Image (cartoon, rainbow, N blue to C red):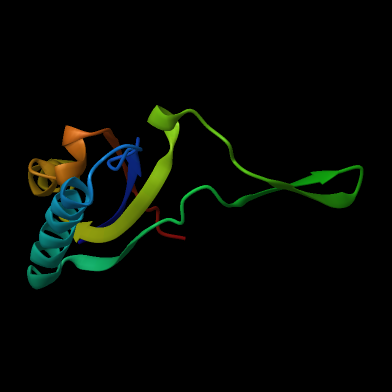
Amino acid sequence: MAKFLLLARGAGIRPGMSPEEIQRIIGKYRSWSEALGRSGKLRDGSKLCDGEGRVLRHRNGSLLVTDGPFTEANEVLGGYWLFEAEDYADAERILADHPHLEFGTLELRRLDTM
């Protein structure tokens, strides 16, 4: 089995949503993730904290750390899942009903063996 990293881009929860709408969306993500877990293919996954992070670079031999990344709402990296699938076709079948597809895009990457 190959390992895949799935990145959720774009915001599922937007300002102005009612608490009921937010809970409904969270429930969809939780249900989907729990089903993947029951299949035995889920290895890890989590929502990323909103509005925080750091970007690290080397500049002139020193470590430069800045707040960020700051992106447009449709470019926000909101969470990830690490899971197993036979190949890209199998991974795509697994992701066909992912709730994030209602709100944004999913980026799927196979992990290379080192």
